Image 1 (cartoon, helix red, strand yellow):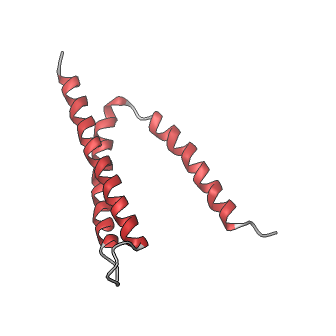
Image 2: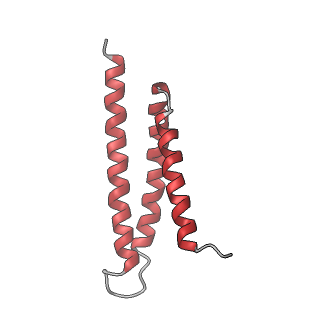
Length: 98
């Protein structure tokens, strides 16, 4: 019996949602800021890959799939980085104010 590859990948995706939910909500508050910093660093690597994907086109058209997905990845990773930094700054200010 052969399992359909779409169903296999969909089940892995759904399981990863549950695992991610339980991992994120079990993080203690003292580890939140260091983990956010690591996440921001990973997002900066994603931006580098997205820039490469956005510029990887071999034709003159800017509306190719790799360009559009690269641009979308740049936007989403930038929002993630700046939002993470703002959240870390806010948590640090709240922690040191008595």
